[in-house]
Amino acid sequence: MADDKAIVLPRPDEYQRWSKHQLIKRVLELEGRLPKEQLDPTNNKEAFGHSDVTKPQKLFDFSKYNTRFIALKFSYLGWNYNGLAIQTMKTPLPTVESVIIESLYKTRLIPSLDPKDFNFSRCGRTDKGVSALNQVISLNVRSSLTVEEQMNAANDKREIDYLHILNHSLPNDILVKSVSLRPPKNFDARFSCKHRHYRYIFYKSDLDIDLMNIAAKKYEGEHDFRNFCKVDGSKQITSFSRRIISSNIVSLDDEFYYFDLKGTAFLWHQVRCMIAILLLIGQKLEHPRIIDDLMDIEKYPSKPVYEMAYDIPLVLYDCVFEDIEWEDQKDPFKICKFADIVQNLWLNHALKYQIVNFVKKNITDDISPSTLLRRDTTKINVGDGRGKFIKKYRQLSSREFMDPVDVINERYRKRKRLE
Image (cartoon, rainbow, N blue to C red; front, side, top):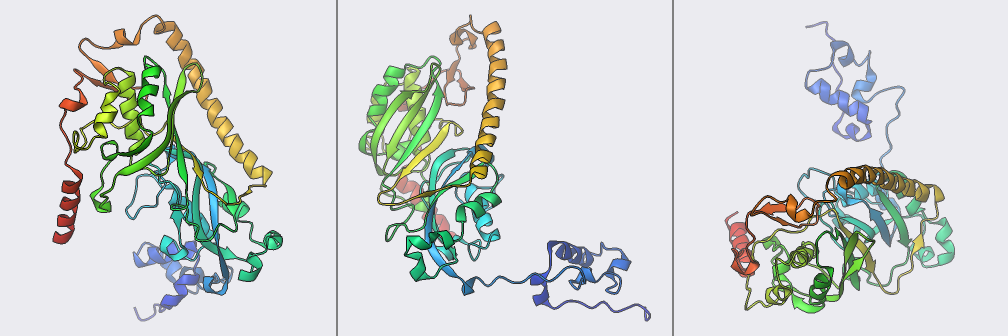
């Protein structure tokens, strides 16, 4: 209508200065879902970014600031995350890296959300549900010092307090423990790591621990572990040789043990496949020599189908580097806050454990686990406490086999060519 007031639209570059509230109003306006009176710029200037109350947000020009290369050491409880590594596709749960990178970007320590823009590297990639006690990343971040000032430790007190800023921004199940302001020359969180240390906790149950320990020692040394991992054609890996420094079964208390494993590097799902075979041996469903057989590529050119161990009991216990100095978190409030979260989580589960234990002692203590099984049924221990029930166990040597590595790699290359 002729008497309607013309709506003054903002310039495209003005959107960058708008608040979240202003942007939401603009979307609603474009969708025709705002009341007419809110479309009138004389009644509601904020709808178009011209509020007299809200000041335009000043753009942050990262190029005007100095940067420095640092390493960060952090812990996380993994069951609320879809693994460590940031993903290009949407995941059901956030990843640990995506949360950390978003916090780094929110606090203006990095220029973007793209890891390529700040020389990002991770030490040990962990699966969905897996936790870490000492994970490490390295990256370039904004600095308040010049390049020359960064070289002198006397200036560190004038540097940005990376630990305080990040821990204030991160959720309570992630704690950045330490920072290295001057990593060794050519340091890379992935390639500079001397070895990774994993622990996998499991319930003793009816497992033969001595037999598991005999089998675990067979992993030590350098071997081809293609039958102890998940082969990913997109990575085009052709060498599956990895060196295991130590492999042991260790008592945690009267009821629980853990698989203690140290190695220079690991393949995708390697640790969970290794413990899965050990659990089969502990149940006496397989003989320890199956490990020798699976590492013999002439005898087993491809992986037999078997269940991988549960993810939650696995912890990346440590990442070991040489010649690197760490400055620990000094904020007692943040340390206590994280410790309080862990303490409350422990107490919550400990109380539930005691209640369930009452029931267990009252009902099942006089019943052996074997009598709880249905006739002609075998329960496979996969580390989750529930197990997998099957009618009859088939030895790994008599099972179906997955495709060999070269077939998987070629199939991926062919699909990419067709795309």
